[in-house]
Amino acid sequence: MSVNNDRYSDILTSLCGYARRDDDIRAVIAIGSSVRESTPADEYSDLDLIVVTELPEKWYSGEYPALFGEVFISFIEPTLGGGMERRCIYSGGRDADMIILTPSQFGSALDEGSAALVMERGYCLLCDKEGYSGKIPQYLSCEVRGDIMGEAEFANTANDFFFHNIWACKKLLRGELWSAKMCIDGYLKERLLKMIAQYELCVSAKDTWHDGRFLDSWAEGFITESLKDCFARYDARDCKRALAATHLLFTRLAVRAADSRGYSYPMAAQKCAAEYLEEHGISLEGIK
Image (cartoon, rainbow, N blue to C red; front, side, top):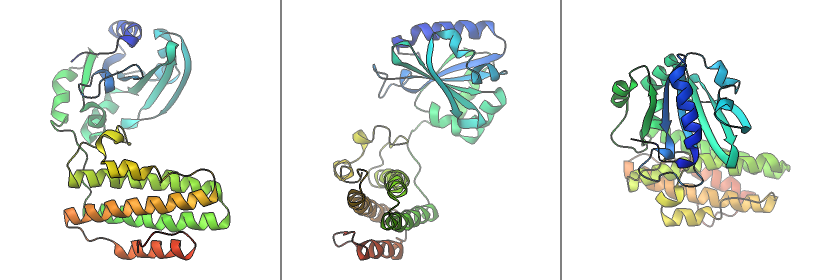
């Protein structure tokens, strides 16, 4: 497999040159859209890399990324395997994301499965001084799809969602609009996304990607249409409307997902949340 993104050829050429000369760099692995066969790179795609190095500090500080081109924006954040990710914007708005791991961290990421999450859709070894070409395949699945929740996780997710329906409503009633909106359009949407994925996995066995990637291409039409009503302006009345729409969509999906798996559905939790919302002026159009 090769890298198919000419926009980053100068950065890759420079990086691979340094990798060959620097004994501390043990491997450079391209992942993401640049090596995917499905949904391949386009003009908006970034460059995703895993860099395995004995000396990560040079990458954490930004010293190494600056050698590959002029960096205009750069920051680091935690990533898989206990490492850090250096994210840079080079000229032309080119986004290069470099997951920096020691050999030990990369080995742990392979063992625990977190590396597979970013490599199963494709990878390309640009530099390999550790013999990873023979090791990596055993950690990757031939089929890429999400995991179906067990019954206990399903029940916990649903109860978590319905609990925070009431929590968000109380914040609105108290006048804490920021907290309420962040719950409705942040916390609750994360749980809604999990249930959208579960519905699709249970009902149609689709590839649901991760973090909502390409949702408009794999979620059923009624879901994407319903989502139009699920997000709110920074306005108390609109937050109430969005909370109701979010509750309705989650409930519809959760009932279907539970039924398809033969799980017990937490009707008492749903009813508790629905009654509280309606008692405080948030109509759920007959959902109890």
